[in-house]
Length: 268
Image (tube, rainbow, N blue to C red; front, side):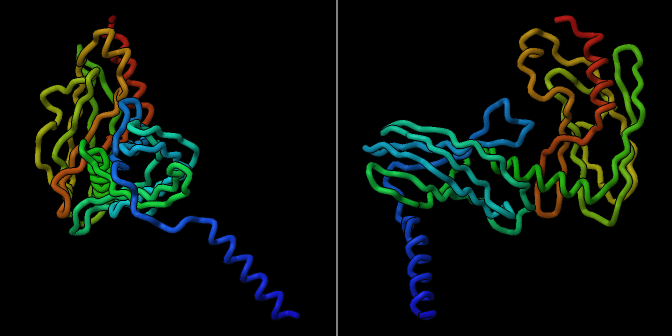
């Protein structure tokens, strides 16, 4: 009796597992690439643009997006019908990227979908024509290397005439080969001449830098469309990475001070 129950349980389990379709090659014309909307620059959210250049509609139900520069996949689920000759964008919030390990960047998407009247599951190579994914994972690597290399202390800001200024102290945490290549301004905020914008500063020794900020653009279009605010960028180089660009970590009191400085001098 127990044997019959065990066999029946195994049959039920097998039946449950068989509901997921076997992997098949994607139809010709089903392609995918990485993109990022302008408004998502600060959220890390990216989209996989799926193009259906086949002769039948496709109904997407799930996606498992993987990359050799991620420690885990990004996932999407839903119900998105894409007509023949049309396309759609599947939004995902990717995990933090890892540093390169001697191999090129690659990504693929496992799609579950209905193709006409047939349930399918296929793996589709994902292209990165605009370098969105590469910039994201390289930036994650650069930020990780910077945080592991130094402790950053930002001094109390001062405003003199038309310049906002603060001292940045970088104290090494451990021996390292990370090099600071400079800071990047934004559209609304520009840098004064003392700010290191294009440099090669090794981070294996204490460094004191000056962050001088002056007005950038103040026209109504820039103010209305600005997506970055006072979030300055930074570039670093590591032994395995030519350069990684990331957002410099400044606390809210610094951002508030910068926004106040800007508001007092900008009347669009």
